[in-house]
Image (cartoon, rainbow, N blue to C red):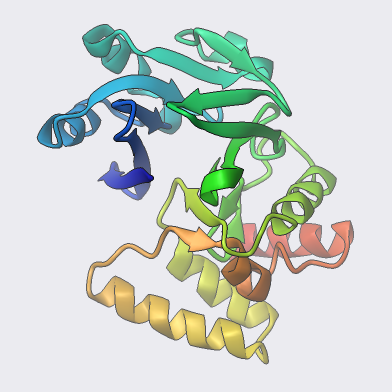
Length: 240
């Protein structure tokens, strides 16, 4: 079994530690900063052996260099963004495989938030680390890509098994849920989930990870039926 630890950093980022007890390996996914991540590993007696980056933004790679200097870990990230992530040791693209112990993750190309964004799907463990492509009840802004690309990403992620646990990189669920309710006010699943999220945030609790099944029911970007519909929803969310 793999163990996952959520590390809140900066204003609303989540860094993830993924640990395999059998091999002793520990992977960091998208370290925005170094010290809280290394402290979390030390507290558990874990040694960081790898970093997996999903895209080049500073709040996802900012801790790379310091963690690598302290641990000698190997850093893997998107080949399409190699020039923007100077610390990479291994460049991966769609359908490549990375490993933690005997567990494997398939690389999924999910461009749109950035041009070379990738996700890591561990099919045997029902996990997906999606960076800033899919959020709980939302999707990433289209900084370097198109609505058509994001539509394809949503369809591809929606096709994963419903029980897949989705680890995204920001605590955006409350804002996303409030927007989703304006888009689909008669969707009972959205109404119920938003009420739950509001209560969780009032208690100071995190609302991620999520699951593919939950997103199919309540994520208005994943539920968009056409590229044009997704584009309109993304533009409305950006303006909200």
